[in-house]
Image (cartoon, rainbow, N blue to C red):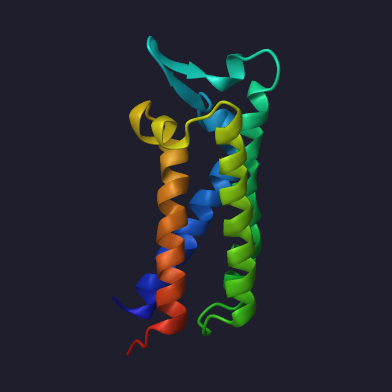
Length: 141
C-alpha cells in the first residue's frame, strides 16, 4: 500500500471516530446489554444509564491527532503524533471499559444489536492504530 493510501485511511478513520464522539447520542439508540428478552438499552436506567453513552464522547478526543496530521500533511509521522494518538486511544479504551462496568456490553452493542456508529468507531480505532504504526515504522517507497 502506498503512503498516500495509508495516510488517507488514517485520516478517514480519525474522522469517523471524531464524528462518533461528537454525535453518538444522535447516531445511535445507545449502549445496550444482553438480557434473556433481547437487548436492554442502558439509557433506560433511571440512575446512570445515560452516563454510559456520554463515555463515547472520549472518541471526540481524536480531533487532536486529526488536527496534527492535517497540519503536518505529507510529512513523516512525528513522535508527538504517536504520543497524542496513544493518549487518545488510552482514554477511549478506559472510557469504554468504564461504560462496560456499569451497564454496557460494548461488543454486543456494536456487532449483535447492531450499532453501526459504535462498530464504525471500534473498527476505525483498530484501523487508525495499524495505519499509524505502518506510516511511522514501516519503510515505504
